[in-house]
Image (cartoon, rainbow, N blue to C red):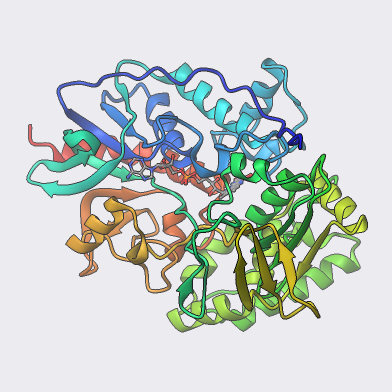
Length: 472
Ligand SMILES: Cc1cc2nc3c(=O)[nH]c(=O)nc-3n(C[C@H](O)[C@H](O)[C@H](O)COP(=O)(O)OP(=O)(O)OC[C@H]3O[C@@H](n4cnc5c(N)ncnc54)[C@H](O)[C@@H]3O)c2cc1C
């Protein structure tokens, strides 16, 4: 049988590897995904300091990470180009890059995600000088030392850094399990939704169950369905898919934000009221959600711990499907598959699986009969509990008490500015975290518009901090 091809993006050569210094750097950035690369970009953009900056990344690539490492051209950004510039104060930078490089220059467009990795890499290439080094290696441990940190990497390499920025981003999904038992290794069990080769090798008429119905499941559905006769069933507890963007968003609607402590119920009510008020004026609900984005971090910090938990259990899913929306073209593709009876999303989760060798019988409470499928794909999204991570760096840092999960286990304990808090709640001087692991503290921290601001702020603070921490 001929396998349908996944349309891929040509990726230019990697940023050349630069061997750094004498094993000592001022800022070591662990992770070269969007968060690490944006931090390096902002550090390199300033000529006012002479800090040596070293990025370490396991993958050997800069700018890709989990989100932008996809090679499938149909995996689009879920944020419009005008909001994805590397620089908060130069909003047109990505659009201008797209124009220069012959890509879609519309500020409202959703570019292929892989193109975004190329943009980040080229932006860093344009700005970097001999202060910058890249080490294609996995960091296994970061040990606080008298004059900063020791970084232990694969191959037994040890480097020293005055300060460290943890930009290790999103973890792989937690293994799928039923009744406390992990799903077995089998031909039909695909634990990694980003393994596009394995998705592409499924038969062109395969029946595939995607566990999860968020943006990862949307990516997998697009890769699986386009140009094939496959059928996809998405299953999650709620069965809700991300909502779609619309062609032209109205300007963000500015809601009156309450003062002082707030409760989860009050926030839900605020959202409902504002959506209703906007509708009365002919404004779409998306403008309200976008308008609440800027105050979200402040509101989250004003929720008590108990109220944050209530938000998570009661309202988070509804907020997430409205907040992290699909690009319009992706939504249109999915609508087409649904109309053709090739895609459905059901609630109720996965109730049982029976291994039949190359196939699997899946019990879904929402369906009257069990379903014979060729594959079950884990699309549950990144795991966030750092204390359960199989990553050696996370394990080493958690064991030593340098890193600790935040109370909701959405990321790591840190201050709103990303200073890491150790197990006793003390700031670890010189150790920072940027991007998704700040989620427990900020909630709104996983997308580029927030990450670039964190990167810019860190780049401003680090020169002074290195001066303070480094003996003359
Ligand atoms: C599928 C998906 C699509 C998304 N789409 C968008 C979008 O369109 N727009 C948007 O704004 N946001 C999007 N996001 C949100 C996304 O979280 C951020 O935009 C951003 O990519 C996060 O980048 P990161 O560098 O923090 O994490 P990651 O992308 O996870 O990158 C982390 C990097 O660190 C490296 N690393 C980890 N541990 C080590 C170690 N010990 N040693 C060395 N290297 C290490 C990894 O190899 C990896 O390259 C998406 C997220 C996902 C998962």
